[in-house]
Image: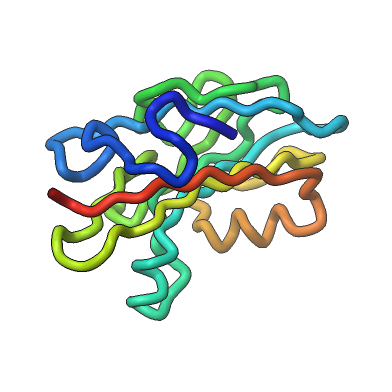
Amino acid sequence: MTTSAFTDGGEIPQKYTQAVQSPVSPKLEWTNVPDGTVTFVLNMLDPDTALQRKTDTVVHWVAFNIPGTAHELPENVPPNAQLPDGTVQIKNQGGVVGFRGPGAPAIGPNHHYTWELYALDTKLDLGPDATRADVLKAIDGHILGKAVLMGRFKRP
């Protein structure tokens, strides 16, 4: 999985972060899709905040039932629970559906933000009221492959 917005492991531009009034999601692209892929799940998280808060529930973006024929998510995915192609987005840590940009504080080290893309052999029977825990439980036993992209950010 790649993005034209930043290099893997690099700094995430402010345009995609909570440092601006209305951050947008970066364009994400992927190749080498496993045979038999029916859908994808995207899980974006901040493991640094999760460790600090001693939780695993820091949700920046979860989307599932992305069609298996897709090879990208465009920049600025609209914050709708159901997208025209069947993709479902759930509420993020801020209680809003869709993407929530990185928001690490200006003090302290950069936070690492991880986008995980899972190729699945099934469509998930979940709705937009699902939690990330629900999604991760539902994909168990259905993962054909996984790609990861990481970026770093802290507020200026």
